[in-house]
Length: 304
Image 1 (cartoon, rainbow, N blue to C red):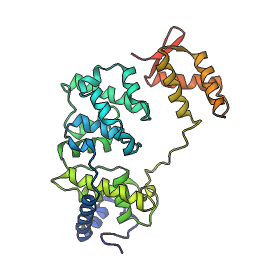
Image 2: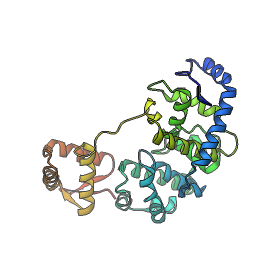
Image 3: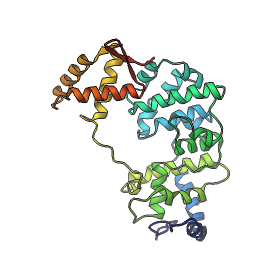
Image 4: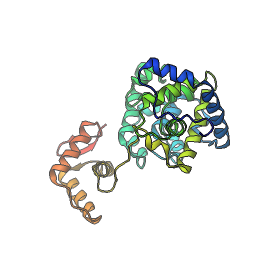
């Protein structure tokens, strides 16, 4: 058995049994904490969003880091913060300006959710993010992990922060032979090991140790039930959505027939079949329903 490692394949079912199991891990958890802090100190990454406690800045970094490599976020976070330095600035921005700044980050829905949440914060919270977990998860686009990250990294509040690097550490040490490990089995361990003080430092250590494990081991996070292998982007519906949105943004306004013709020409130039008219209409309808574009006469434009 490795130092700090428990060989169980999963936590026992039932809350009482789980509590008993966690209680029995007392010495192991203590050794585990020491090991994580040691590895974390050795592998600490001096990332720019770690130099602030501003809840807004931390929120933006948490959203950007969802399914996006740290290296890419490093090139964009400071630029985004310079352009939209406050919640008020983000709320006041034109949708097309926000989407232009977000290009290259992927998952444009995240950008819209940022603005929707910023609008609520300006309206209901005097231009600030709310300071409780419950109020944070009520905002558009803020789920349990993002809310826990804001509470931990901004307020240093004990939180149950579970994301891919955190999963990698706990799976590596407590579920080494398991597959499809659910978060409900990881959560009691995360709760039991989270300290009352220096919560930021604890989670930074977990994140940096987890990043190292993913590089040096066979990525333990792949054994998590929450792990999703991203489908190929070229030729996918996601790519067509992004391509059509960029065309509308670049042109200002464009009719559906021209968009379909241009997308067909692009797909053929890449050696792929042209999409059907129904496919293009369906994608444009999705973009409109989600608040990206709207009709103006016979043309499409980015929503105001």
